[in-house]
Image (cartoon, rainbow, N blue to C red):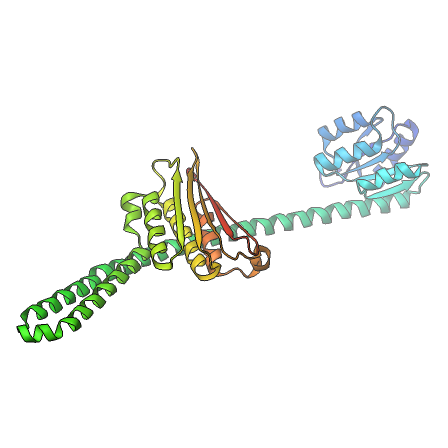
Length: 363
């Protein structure tokens, strides 16, 4: 016999029947690795020889019958069973069907019936093994694709932040300085005007200077929105407080910000992601919620940081937009995942909306 010959374990408590089965299986070209008369002996034989298939009588000596043995074989080693039975009541057959055996042979049976049933059982096992391999390969490929997408998302997010920083710097250093210079030139022009001309054009000069000042302020807001220097200089709590104050001023929505148990040394990517999520959440409040007030809370634990953003607006049904969520919600969820965190949206019609982000501090 070669190592490729199918290995079969016979579990039969009638010695004459067991010996006959062993001889018959050997003539058919199978390798009988053992004959067990009880359930416990069958389990010990399987641990030792790991057969490809078990032929088992349902009724066995001892407290463990063939059905219990077959269940353990399937659960522990994935070994299929073909039951041998003379007579069995309906309740026993129902128990046997639960473990999905690969076949039944009713005693007495012919050599051809035995051979055909075993071959079908071995084919089903090989097919199941092949499907399992394909499934595992597909799962491995899916995991690799997920990892590739994760890395790509991280790279895109990093590139986006770099581009935001570059644009913010250009706005501040170039356009901001030009506007400041323009304002100085207008003021100098006003000073150089003759008394009568200055008096007549004073309202026009003041209006132009006010517009330039307003434009400079808007440019500063855009620049800080693209890249908040306060986040790097003073930390997440101060940056979020300033963000909420600016938002409240621009949109006339009352914002209550609170922070408690803030841990030291928050990772920079975690701080930036939470800041961007809060920023996007406030944008959604302004666009969609029609809320009059909102609360933002930052709560620290020894190993995590949680951000709560809740508004008193009209709310929505999260299930209705799950498959067609806007880019804002997708972006927030992605940022949470990139720092190893989770994002949960809780909302309902007329009940406002709450966004909860949990971020680990050590990854």
